[in-house]
Length: 220
Image (cartoon, rainbow, N blue to C red; front, side):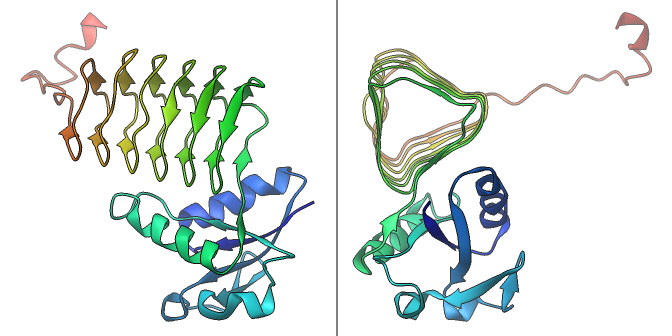
């Protein structure tokens, strides 16, 4: 059993606390920068200052998870990942038991993979990657460090490694595509060509019809 400190006190940190209640590991405490702490306790556990966390929870006895989402294009999470590593902590990774994986699978530190994903053989996932629910990550695909994959995403096989990316809800990346670093793939987007670094893609918004719902109720 691993003893875990969660960095963060926001909504994501609280959800991760509840996911880990079903694991064999135990959350011991929360932590945050001292200037961000406005309470001594969260969900029945103490909240400690990150600045001197290693004095209370030695890195050789405890692991840490950086529970920050995609703020500042994942760079805030990346910053504290690096700071926790400098303190000597092992960064904890979690895969929900309902996610299907095969033996030929590599995953780094500080990764969190939620329910009902299918991750095919020979997939490689770097450090500090968060993946939501109901995604298909096809064979031989590489996801680089510091990425955030939302939910209902389809990734074809042999997609090239990109870092610090955000992939939005229900988007699709076709087979053998190379995604540039620091790209934003918006919700519902279909990527069929290679992307360059720092590009942003957005799907067309839904069209609002002039009729009211009452006027077309007989049609549905």
